[in-house]
Image 1 (spheres, each protein chain N blue to C red):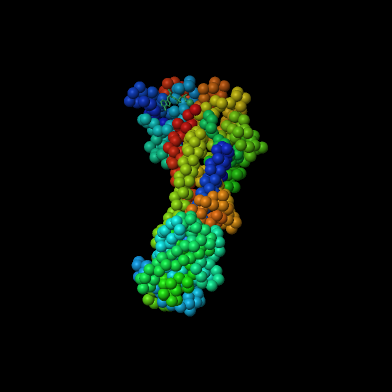
Image 2 (spheres, rainbow over the protein chains, first blue to last red; image 1 turned 90 degrees about the horizontal axis):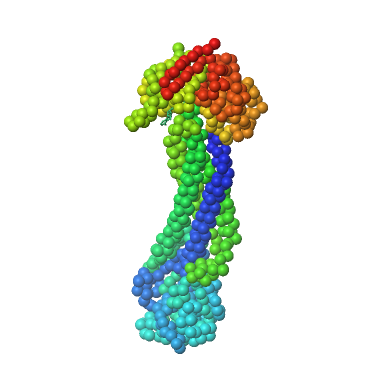
Length: 404
Length: 228
Ligand SMILES: Nc1ncnc2c1ncn2[C@@H]1O[C@H](COP(=O)(O)OP(=O)(O)O)[C@@H](O)[C@H]1O
Ligand SMILES: [Mg+2]
């Protein structure tokens, strides 16, 4: 009890120095927590965008289509198939697509694109695609020869809204077919490479050219909850027994690795901050021990045992770090919570954010375990930096210390 | 039985190069309730001898027996415990813990000993009142005069009921009046509480208060004079 009181009062002997250390711990934690949450938020936004708006949670294909991409490798079906998928519990929405490789040509340029024949309404429910439009309109009305292309592709082709472009592709029977399309909308998804190589048309219109009736190449499913996919999968597999049913992480294994490594990044960042703080603490406490050589010698002379001397110095280190850390964790948590709710408007950097495929308003995300893990890291750091000064204090000899 | 007994005691510094005999073959005994003073010029070995007797230092040769126990052969941690239970210390300066009040400082050793709170409070307050510090219980050392600080240090040593109190030049930093006051107080406690005091000084003014005066010269025992 006496020791705790002494330790606490000792840290206030040099107010400025102690406050500086506490402030450093405080700022380090707040900054660490906030930036970790911001990075998480950016990553989440990026991955969410990517998963929800591009690959969706689950995709269904003809088993060979994934590798071979042949026009005839369709999943057979009619629109009642799509409706039945949409009724599966846990499914938020679903859409079907025709997907072919084709040549795209304007008056000035020719290139290759991946052409999607989509059902505008269900597509938009599933991928919210229309929000990427920067010019013109989303596909609307009866099936017609409208086409949506990416902004960067439009630049390459030197075309705008209303321009006429020609697509050439093979139909089901391997005949080369060409068709003229009118640019109705230009989109920017935030992923440049995607925008350069992707175009969208009405599925019904495309299917007629291809001669594949109501078949499709891809069925994309957006679940209510990304954590529920395994419970939806069997129902889908049952509905399409011959087809391949894959979840987002099977479609893009690299994505899962990136998500985990963004967590890792946060921890590495925090640990770097902590190493900096540990040196600050160590330095401060060594100074404190050095300044009090005589006093500590006197304590040992009058009979304070080594365990208590050690505890006294160690407790001072702990108090010093914990008082800053406790407030830092609290403020950091509240700050992140506030911005998580309100969102941080980074539209000033919208170019960069777009490049990253991230929304302009970022919501910092804090892994619920993060503050706890952080507290443990702080405790470990404080304990480690408490040991050396305390051992240093023990190495003092009472007579040397008392000698004038 | 003697409370302190040294026999053939040596403390030699730099034994391999140019030896300094800080304490040179001293055999001496002190009995309970003595009020003794070690004098001698600066460098004569007073501090070294007191440190050996107090178990703060280990002799090069010879033995130190305190309350019937050989302390020269004890392990470091046993000596710390022995000092806590058996020996009271008053140093020349840096006696008190700056962050504790006069009362907390005076009670410090009793608390280290694990004495009960009530016993500690009664004894410490009583002693502080007895030495005229009843109204300074909550003052920090920095708010006390040098003389008051030394009195708190004496109370701290005394409160823990040691076998004797060692005081190495306790008046060195005090003016004449404060020095006399402190010595009178120590002498009074010696008579009333029956506590053994062994202190060192090279201050002629306070030597007269001692009942026994041991004189060191160059680490050797020069004279040992008992007074009435
Ligand atoms: N650690 C040490 N190393 C070398 N010599 C020392 C050491 N401590 C004390 N001495 C020497 O021992 C002698 C006695 O010192 P000390 O006991 O402090 O004398 P006093 O207290 O009477 O002034 C002195 O000559 C001093 O220089
Ligand atoms: Mg001395």
